Length: 99
Image 1 (cartoon, rainbow, N blue to C red):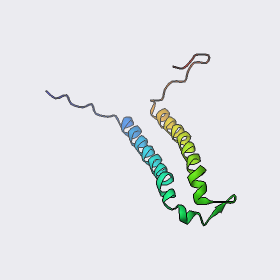
Image 2: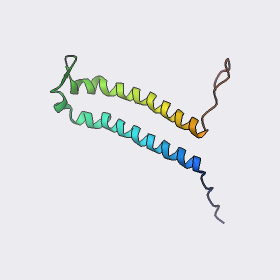
Image 3: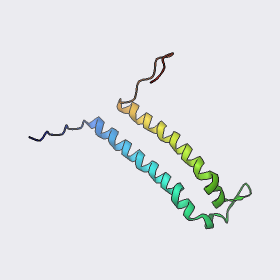
């Protein structure tokens, strides 16, 4: 006999929806700076930033800076979503080594 899946609570549904939207938004930004910006590198080279063509700058530094900032932004937003839903990891006790 097949086991019926457990019904989600409204809080779980809200948490899941926010988490999925955050993931989709993060992947969209990643796609834009990982692929689209590099696809328009020749058009972006007409713009100069700090003496360098923008296409070169985005390929060499800009996308990497955006990716690092995206990681920190994603972690902060996910932590806020988890805390609002009551599923965040507990804060470590001061002086205790986290595992």
